[in-house]
Amino acid sequence: MTTAPLPDLSGNTVLALHAHPDDESIFTGITLRRLADAGARVVLVLATGGEAGGSRLPLAGDTVALRRRRELERSAELLGVSRLVLLGHRDSGLPGGPDLGHGRALAAADPLALGRRVAELADAEGAATLVFDDDAGIYGHPDHRAVHAIGATAAALSGAGAYRTTVDREHLHVTARGRHLVHGAAAAAAVAFGRATAEITTAVGGSPADLDVKRAAMAAHASQIDPDALSGEDFAAAYGYEWFRRDGAPGVLDALGNVHLLAGAR
Ligand SMILES: [Zn+2]
Image 1 (tube, rainbow, N blue to C red):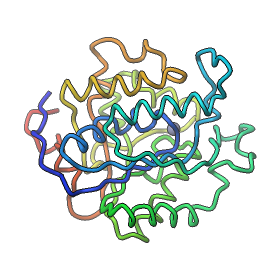
Image 2: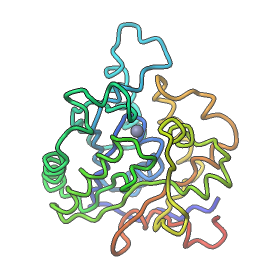
Image 3: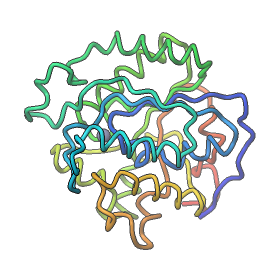
């Protein structure tokens, strides 16, 4: 795998907005780690506590939210996050499920009010770049769609550049053969996922060291992710790249290594 050398991004602040604890590691783990290693300040904003995710492990008296918060804090530390901000909404669960009707469900919250809050945070942090889910919500989950609406509002209000997180569906069909967690998530939501390669502007590739960090950050979410999903040599095939759609001129994420521009990288 060809990996671009890291640029000097000191003085830059990037605000990454995600729906649930573990999304930051699955969809942007390499990107956040490379930003931090390049000297950028990374602010991670989580919209919900992931309450609808349940737990694959005994909780020993913890609530799902408390366990997932601890896992998130560990993941954020591994990924070099400078500041973690929780918006305090509740996981909306899958379409048709009981969690959508909860009073604090993110999908029922006002995206304009939350977008203003995130824009104020971006302004206070001097963040010129926002990262948030694309308009399809990566795979259509209501909370991921909500994160898109919040992020797009915040970008418009703050004037920050926007990278919209997705996955390259064609790459994953060819290389991962159903291995990426988004395959199962999309099947559960009964929707298509990701984008065609031609719709993606920016792909960030990880070095072997970046991949080790991403694997560890995903493993920190032990209540959600089966360790079997993280083992084996094909981890890199499923998780070695992260994909974004950007409007306008290339920005800091492109400087991390756009593999489409690196001959022989794909
Ligand atoms: Zn999620």
